[in-house]
Image 1: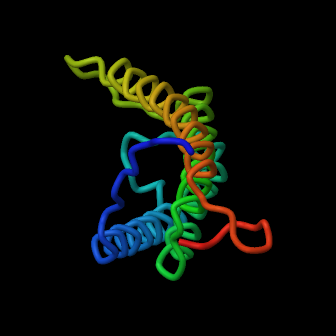
Image 2: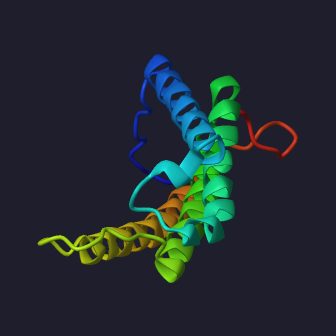
Length: 156
């Protein structure tokens, strides 16, 4: 028998509210980026943003789909797997934005381009750490799940 501390999950209603908020935010961002005039209306985005739109859309759609799924079914293991998927998609988008850097802040006394690079670097590093933590959490979640009668695992 293994002894461990079982962490308590957030109650259902706040979890559902969070999933719903994520679905709405991702949907709105998708509409704003891909609608008319879309991202072209943002003054500091260059034409190079079209090279990153696909991966940004991928990250947003991934978050929208997983959030929608969690509105109906959110066992801890699935939330962890979906967190890995959405974090991975976000990491791909951040790395692509870093590579293309479709931002131009013009001549200002503040070096906003350097500040944006720092924000991107922090996001990339945080995503890598989140992927590692998510993998550890997935293993721990899998170890906590009791075996069902047929050797399968029981639901939560």
